Length: 94
Image 1: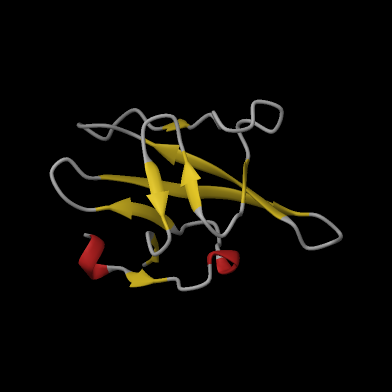
Image 2: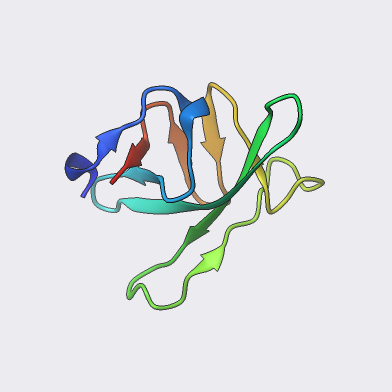
């Protein structure tokens, strides 16, 4: 699936429906399910995931910022989730 999706080169271009994906075995994917933008243009977003079988989707907590959790902030390095770290270049779009 990772190879079928289009890369989003600027993380700041994230939109609901985009996917953070790490291919391989094991691989994993999380979907951006909501986003908010403040007056100064700062974006925060919610991530959802499931495991096999993909029938119990849930919102992911933000372990890096418990005050903001479950929302995540955009940064230019990586996105840290409870079980996965998604580095630059892992944001994709259908």
